[in-house]
Amino acid sequence: MARIAASTLSSFESAVFADERQRPTWVYTPGLTARPFWTREQCGRLTEMIVAFEAGREAIAAEIAALDTSRMGVPYDHLSVAPEQIRGWKNLFFFKDYQPDHELMARVPTIRAITERFGPAQLDRFELFLSVLEPGTHIPPHFGGSNCKLTLHLPLDVPPGDAAIRVDTETRGWASGDMVIFDDTFDHEAWNRTGRARAVLLIKAYHPELTAQEIGVLEMFAPLSAKVYRELLKTKGRGQ
Image 1 (spheres, rainbow, N blue to C red):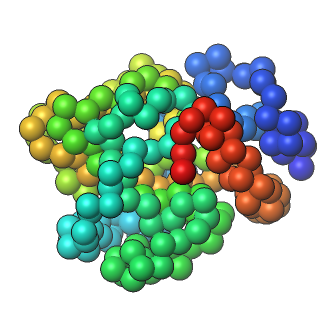
Image 2: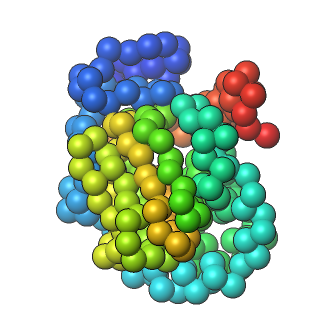
Image 3: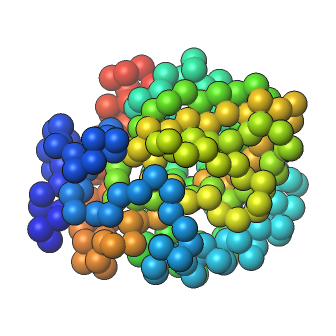
């Protein structure tokens, strides 16, 4: 448990980062490999889960296309990005703060089947959501919350043209259909400068170098961590 004990999990205090380009806004865990973008082959035990989502991409896209997305009016709650900056970033949550939306999940059986297949070691349930960038939207440069997790984008509907994400110094698009895997604790931004919305399924996963025991400790603290996170958002006038 040395890495977890040395993390900021219990204190939420400022940390000294091994890589100055990496600045988690929430919890920093030392001793984990840090790279802006990851390949499927670098993801170890996460690879099977990634392949499952990629194999189900067309079915997932069809199921989501049949949903009523009028509920997507609230921007994502974020510590480092003010809501007025991201009004065109719309989201529909299947999991939020580890709680599933059972009504929504019943309408997306492919997502439900995959989430039931994989446990916390492959799939983090803090959040899993449809992420839409409306035309002309730019999410400004910012840092994510925790380096013990990776962020995964499964492309669902990507318009041709200038729609991309920059992480650190590298910019990539979503057009290939493959999962885009990155560490959001590096400075990153995303934009959609086309005339049509861009849609991806945003998935979180624990860092593949964490042991089952370390993940167990993180999961034990997860409900309290989510509660503290929400309270901190309220102090900034954000969240619900």
